[in-house]
Structure formats: C-alpha cells, structure tokens
Length: 337
Image (cartoon, rainbow, N blue to C red; front, side, top):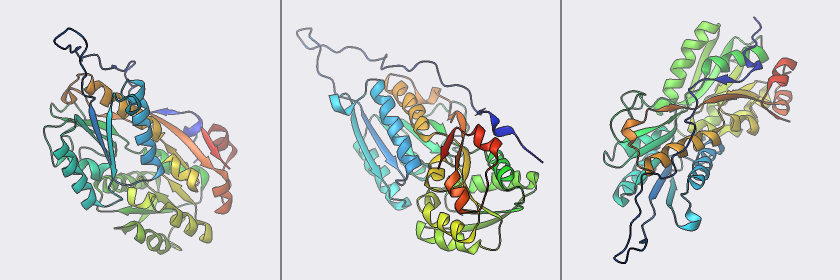
C-alpha cells in the first residue's frame, strides 16, 4: 500500500510559547549608595551522556537560546559548566554528584542516563532534561503534566509509526526489520517496545540485537546479516555513537539502514522523519531561561519536541542498492548527496 504521509511536515506537539521570558523576575540590587550592585551570574551546569552530533546539537541550541535570553558566558552574565560522561553510566553518576555538590542554580541533563543520575541525586536543585525519550518510564517525572516538583524538560519520543511507514515507502519488499539497541537504557527499551507494537500493525517482523557498549555494535549489526530486509537504528546513544560500523555493514551487505535522527542520516543512514536536535536544544533553553527568570519548574509541563522533518541521503541509498521514490525526494526537508 502506498503511503503519502511524508508529503508535508507533521506537527506532533503544541507550539512553543510565543515569547521567552528574559529574566523578568529579577529585582535590581543596589549598594549602600543606591548604585546598582554587582550580582553573581546564575550558574547552569550541563551534563551529557556522550558526545555525538545529535546531543551536541542539543547543547549548542541550549547555549544559543540562553545567549538570546541574556545569559552569556562572554559577558559574564552566565556561569556555564559542561561535562560529558563518555557513554558511561558510572561517569554520569559521578558528574551528577559533583554538580549537586557545586550547588548550581540549575542543572541541564542531556539524554536519559544523565537525567536519571541527576534526578537521583537531588530534589532541591531545578533540573531540566532534554532529549529524553520517555521521562515517565525513566522515573524522572510522574507524568507529562506539571509535577509540582523540581524537574521538567523536553522529550524527543520518536514517531516510530512514521519511521516504519517511511521504510515501507522506500523498500516496499521489506518484511523484517533489525533493530540494534542497548537494553540497559530505559529510553531504548521504551522505543523498542513501541517499535514492536507499531511493526505488528504495519505487517513487519522485528529482529532485535542488543549491545552493552559501542564496541558491541559492529558484532550486533553483523548478526542481522541474512536475517532482515532493513536495519533500523533508534535514538540510542550507545548505538548512534558507533553508527559508522552499522553503515559499513549495510553497505557491504546491501542492507538498507534507516535511523531515528537526522544527524545519523547525514552520517550515512538512508532516511528518517526526525526532529532538528538544535531546535530541541533551543526549546530546552527557553525552559531554562524561564526558570532563571523566576518561574517554578514544578509549574511547567514536560514539552514534546515539536516539528518532524523528512531527511534523506541519496548517496547512502545508492551505496545500499536502494532507489528513493521521487515523491519522497520531492517532499524531503533535507537532502544529503
């Protein structure tokens, strides 16, 4: 059955607030002579589970949005601390403990393992998470509604139904899909559970290959050769950090590789319907600026990443023996060649 849902952009969450509060709750402090007194810049500490293009784009968008809101390292209006856990949960826990000890004004946690580490170590410091697939399953918040506590943020729950429809449109003969994921990451487990439900509805069989570290990814990809018609890489930090090994297996064995994020398409996957992670970072920065300006994180519902864009990589498709239909090419928001 032909699907045409990719001919227009899909809005999956309410629009962002129309304006950003630019620190409007701060009172001017004066010295004994009535002159403006020097005030200490707010301290934002940022922890990130691993460095790869999508999560780096979140950090960049966050920083740029804060600059626009008047919080900038360059003019000393912001104290900024950032650390990467290098993909290790133990490192994420150590960073969280260090940050809590430093007592910043706010902690931003990028990706689920880092967010879990921070939330598990403080209930007094405001925490804004970003790029977290399922914050409820990860036990960061009790629901997506305003929690009344100190935690809120932005979820990047992937539109799995759209991803499967895209695979069907580009590879109509595909019946079985391999997925590689780290079962130890709650966000990945949630995605694969959703993938299994959607795959059954759309007539696919799913073959899963699990990994614990990025070093396991190439072996997992090779285990799917001869077993599946296409490989799907979800927004799993462990797998995405080793994406090139999956792409190589796809190229060598003519197995189409699809992904859950746009940066992975630029790196060599064939296509995705995904969020712009820089914009996810800006959306996160808007929430951070509002809290620095005086809003209570407990009054702020979790937000969903807003607009889905279609990205395709024509060179990757050719390398894997796939021809992208003209209707998909014509409707793509980003085309890599």
